[in-house]
Amino acid sequence: MTTAECLKDKVIVITGAGRGIGRAIALLAAEQGAKVVVNDLGGASDGEGGADASPAESVVEEIRKAGGKAVANTDSVAEASGANNIIKTAIDSFGQIDCVVNNAGILRDRIFHRMSVVDFEMVIKVHLLGSFYVARAAAPYFKEQNSGSYVHFTSTSGLIGNFGQSNYAAAKLGVVGLSKGIAMDMQRYNVRSNCIAPFAWSRLIGTIPTEGDPEKERRVQRLQEMGPEKIAPLAVYLASDLSENVSGQIFGSRMNEIFLFSQHRPIRSTHRSEGWTPQSIAEHGMPAMESNFLPLSRTADIIGWDPI
Image (cartoon, rainbow, N blue to C red; front, side, top):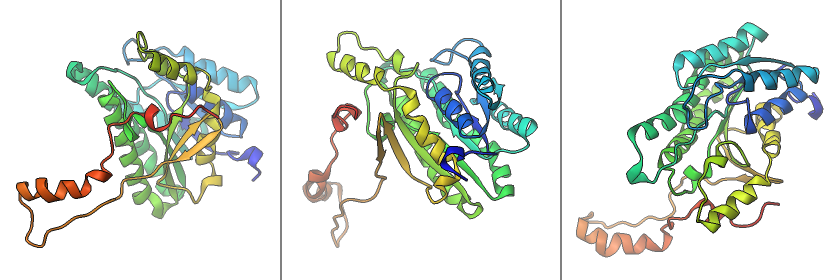
């Protein structure tokens, strides 16, 4: 296998592939020899509206015109039955499934005290449950063939933090836990699972309100300069056998940078031989650890340098 054909004879399912990052991954995967299932419900960025097959079909047409192989699917990842149909499309069309890219998503940003139950549940359902449903539908095939790769999309909103996105942050940090669990459970079957936190302009990013906030306006302006095609190489690499020794990791991709994110580990310990009381925790425990407390930072506070 050459790097020019790193997905030759592989079948890859990409959710939310009708636009933005998913579309860029689908085009590059096909260029790298993959047979692609382009899944996209075609709904609005907040999950409302009926299905529209045209985004997925447009990407399929683009791939076929370039000499590649692709089929469209418009099932919703937010239902287990839809996820099963997405994987079934791969099996029926191409006879196998080798990689799942969980990219589909919606945004319903609200400051927490204004966030409705529906706002929270819909974002969890699409991002976290949707990632589980599609991954689980592919798992028996991966186990049987003793190979496979999952690429899940997370976000620095969960890894670091952001205003007005407690639903999105919870879902995206949940995806990290899901990916790690899959990586540990499926490693015996040579199945890998990794996460990408992307920095790129997309339809969802375009919904972020910026009016009256110069800092947000600058951040969004920087994101507009970062095309989704910059994310695709890392996703395709993780989908391919080139990444056969990479699993359970969290990567970031921003312009020409690739980040490896740390994961939760204990950083400080304190003890009392007689045990703790609420009062001794206040007097001794917390003062011993507070120098290591993490502040309530946002992504822009931690990754504040300009894209490279």
